[in-house]
Image (tube, rainbow, N blue to C red; front, side, top):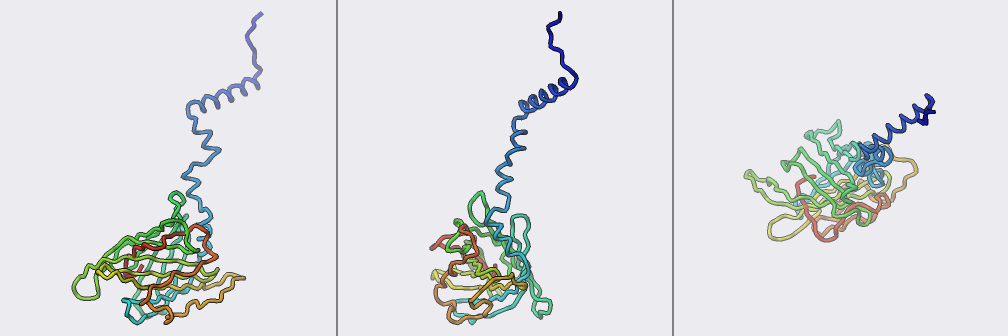
Amino acid sequence: MNNSVIFSMPSLHRYCRLFGLAFAAVLTPGVVLSQQVPSAATRLNELGPENSRLAQRVGTWDVVETVWATPESVPISNKFIAERTMVGPFLQEIIRPAADSAGTDFRRIYYLSFNRVEGRWKYVSLDTRNPVGLMPAASFGPSENGSIILLFEPFAIAGSGTDVAGQMLRMDETMTQQDANHDRAEERFRMADGTGSMWLAYRYEYARRHPTEGSSFSGDHLSGVRAARGPGAYPPRPSASRSWPDSAIGRKDEMSPSRESN
């Protein structure tokens, strides 16, 4: 009598299938595992809590830009429109003049995202109004008092005269979500002129064009120029915000400004 094992056809098919899966797993051990656990790159490319909060700022915003060209300058205010959209994990903002504006057409564009690998915010911007090129910036850490504080790479400005000044400049920017419908961004400049003086150079105040239901706000948003906070003194950072998660950016003393308009 033959002692060899005899398989029925269904059993044989099942045996071959199991053997094939085991053989494939031996040859490519990462295949089965990768189907169960996403890679670190895949996980960290998801929005996460910081960029999910950032995505809530998508929409059309009215913007008041206030500019102090020098610490002694009289501030000038301009009104613009900002369109915000998400491009993957990046918030894209495009500022432009209103359709009925008589001023020069321009675009001020930035991308902002929380880098979950580095644990800090990364940013880059451009402004077609000034020959300053791309403006990269990053935070030192996640958050500081509910605000995002970006430190820019130093850059050179052409100057206001007919000859190129090539004056080096450092800059930082503090972004604060004041409530669901109001944001503020402030940029401080420090010139490499031997004085070490620093001043508030740009302020951007945002009001959502189509407010979110149920939001409340009791501040002086979109108030234009506020003489009480002129550019001559060291401008305080914006107060803590409930909108940013505890992961935004920061460093308290050292700043690294960088440009004429970010």
